[in-house]
Length: 96
Length: 205
Image (cartoon, rainbow over all chains, first blue to last red; front, side, top):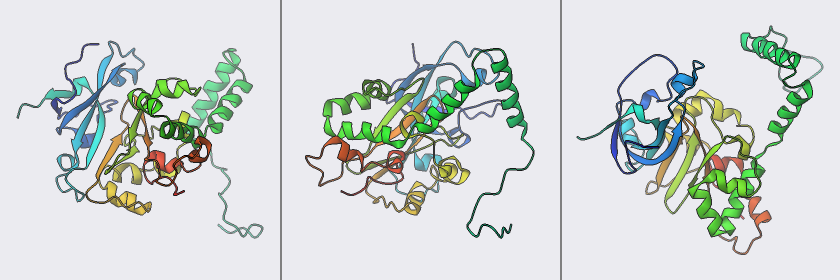
């Protein structure tokens, strides 16, 4: 499997709102995080949901987000995080 | 509802009509049985096997990891393969084990539905499937854990894991102090379902 991102890469989740069966939670869209690991390649759930084969398989990542990136008024401590599984086609490089 | 015969609390009988999906499940099941793809006893046995899974399976994995550093390393590298080593039937489950370390606590959730490592922990508790837990634990995890009686100090990192796609998660809690030399079976008794979800810590010895 070739994957576009590597652990440690800074990425941004696409800010998009397509209809259908989407596994990218709304609270992560448009947010910046870091690749924690590559989970492998999996059939695309957005296609599987409509009884199609979901192929080719898509790389799946675990992205680590700072809580304060997800929730600017997060009331816990600054080092708290959330890890979320995100498919590659929902990620873009974060160059900022 | 009042019931003169039963002063204790009980769930009302389910006398309402079947829902759309209940009707669909029955129709599909009956059709598949009629087509000889499986029989009614296969369905019953599959339900029985699902109900028989319990957190004791996960507790055994945790206790082994506490006793065997090489196993723990393999478990953290590839949770599925390490559990299969112990003879646990993993099916299609892809397991990621996250370890509680010094000043680091992990907790798992599925905000989209209720994904849960059933092969290791059995059926999820009702609260795990409810919107209150699913929406709040990613937003105010320290407050949620406090409601479970778990206080995470501010100088610890709290790491939430949202199972949004193909992986399932289990927390490997830290081995309680004062358990040096304990056999695996005795250690496993300290490992509860909730500490493998991450809303609490193992029982004190």
